[in-house]
Image 1 (tube, rainbow, N blue to C red):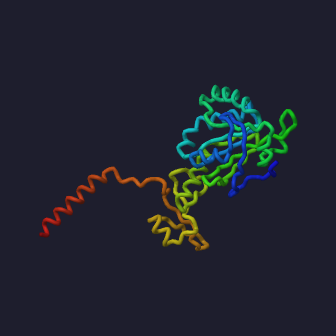
Image 2: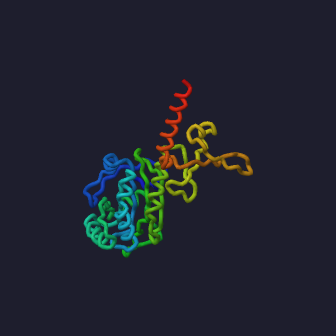
Image 3: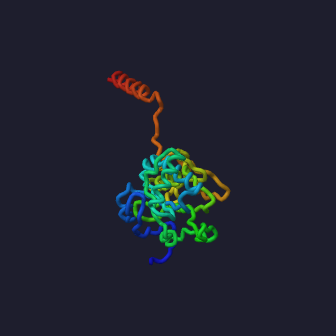
Length: 252
């Protein structure tokens, strides 16, 4: 069997074949056929309370992930047929169908291979259960971010969406997101840009003075948010054009 490896940021995600609620998954092909980004997340077991709330929230927010070009795929240490039965409970509890694949890892092959097992938490068979791992996988099949929770702590879906938006923003623009950032908030200009480059790319950016005098705290508006003109901009533009035409006529 393949050697166990903990997937960390920058790692290429290995290929694997597994059964799922959507049929057989060949993971690299699954990534290639997707919209670009993939979020793989593990669960300890089917028919457990915290996992049921999580899957239900992922189902309810699937359209938000879709809008960001992110496909969801879950993994749990039960069979695909168990997953299918569990999905009925999830939909009844949360009111949304689970319209994404849940991988069958009933033999714990993938949980072991990717070191997603909690050595201290055991199931009724005294086997270690998977932790709540999240892998954000980019279009290049590399891990872009990871989050890991213990089995007793449920994940925060808005935070996962925030991470994806931040990653995509940093890919599109030379910026980084500060503490507690939310989409639309101001962002930090990356140190790789000189002040001259920053001024050309982000006119009007703010440099905050600090005792060190290093000038490394530079902020700008979220470049993904379109700049909106004032509501009366068309009228102002028309007035300006009329004034220009009048001045031109008077000078002839």
